[in-house]
Image 1 (cartoon, rainbow, N blue to C red):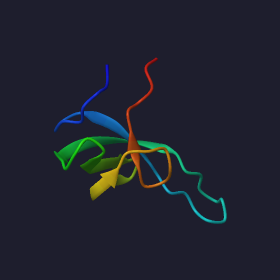
Image 2: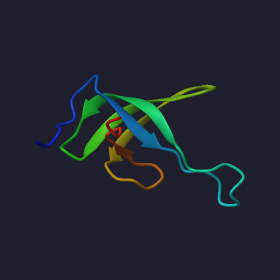
Image 3: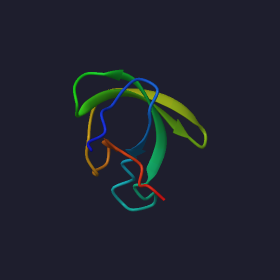
Image 4: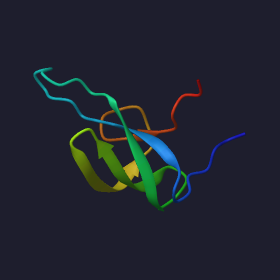
Length: 72
């Protein structure tokens, strides 16, 4: 069963990190605020120090992309 993105779903946004490695790329909680298609969404990303909005985010595991959180 494949999950479909929809407004209000919680996902992980993978942060970029820094080129020098001072800050690692890590997952951040995000809420889908709009759906473009099955792989592209608009997000409200929640960071420890605030939030930001990101449009047209592609699904994947690289920095700047979103994915479903792992089931635990």
